[in-house]
Image (cartoon, rainbow, N blue to C red):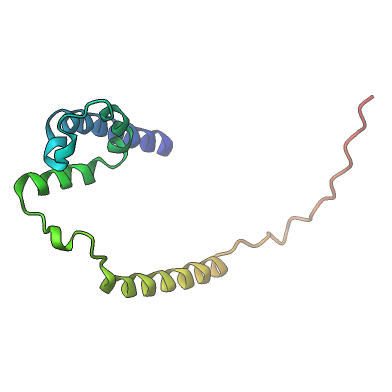
Length: 123
């Protein structure tokens, strides 16, 4: 049941990505990259990437089509958030190790271990 739900979500993600990819490659690529307006041979190569990251493509297409892009800060990394991410990951590792040690399974006391016999030789 859970696996079928996950597969359904993945399928919906991919079909949405295909639709966004076709629309983007037909109507929006020249707004994101001016040099791509005449080049049509490489567009089918982009469809796989667009299928995977279609929300980012839609967001970037929207930002550039509206002209609200701050191109001066486009390549400035958000270093102020790196400290928060490092602290969060350190705490997450400590918590996950602590929980795994606290929730580890124990062998039931009323079941005696059995010694496995050797496999019979093929005759």
